[in-house]
Length: 405
Image (cartoon, rainbow, N blue to C red; front, side, top):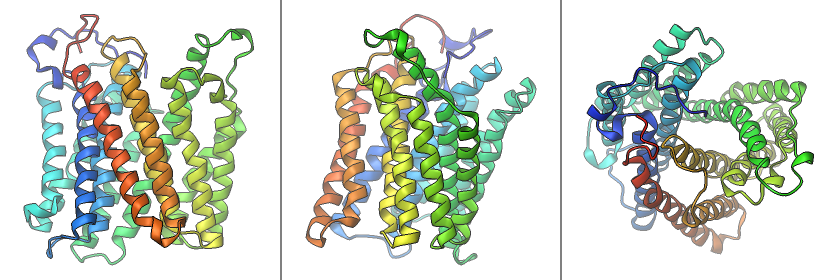
């Protein structure tokens, strides 16, 4: 993301800092959700306690990591990027507080120990994404940015995914949860594909000019055919996974998409940025996409456990890219140098270890599985706790350059 337009903003000091820009609240609380929700899940695994009236424990865990943590990060990114894309004022103050309240209300409503009736919880939880779409629609439509308006469609599809899950939990649509999770994961992967194609080459090209002595030989390559093929295959995988996740056709699409993403990533030449953690973590995160798609393809074609591919995508790709973008954007959009601390680098390493452990756990000998699950969970919690320690002061403080936002 480039620096957002703040033209005409004279109300910054009157608005609490946390609600002066979307990234402040949502990047902070995405980290809070990452720590709190995973800690709660570890508690469930260790104690085995779960309310009788609630949806299945695994389904709640998957739902909250996707529609709690991941969606918060998506909201923070889009609420910050859209003003930059459109040259319009950012959502701030009371409207942003309302969005924040909707997101928090959804987490409380779905939390199993609150005992909220499922129909009420469903309405509260589903409300956030339409609210986000409404907040983003006005500047996108007003600016005529139809290319970027595709994100409104993706938000609508995420809303549909959440509705499918809740309809299943309400026993109104058998199989709705499986379809909803497949759709939700596919839409987030599409967002990663689109946004990654914008920011990774740009950030890498800019950053490589500051890294190493051989600046004249550094380059980033993108091939139009590969870009189109990557988007088409990633999009095609969504209905294929929803309709027939175990079929050979779905497996072949996943493997073809993995190759396309790998070729795309190779063109960005991220290995040349090994001296810059704020750059290489983006490439590590995106590397998990072809790994996850390969594992998904091998699940359909060779019977590998589905959980390996799922967690390579969620813990590996989604969480790593979220941590990478939040740590970078939080610095850039608060007027601070784009240099991460040692604690942040340690968080990158811990999250990568968590992704490796969780992805590998279904493939390990039975006696090792529980230890792998636990330690990958601990590494995840530690990584995002370190992010919060490092970035909560940044997100809760005024910009270092004195500008509003």
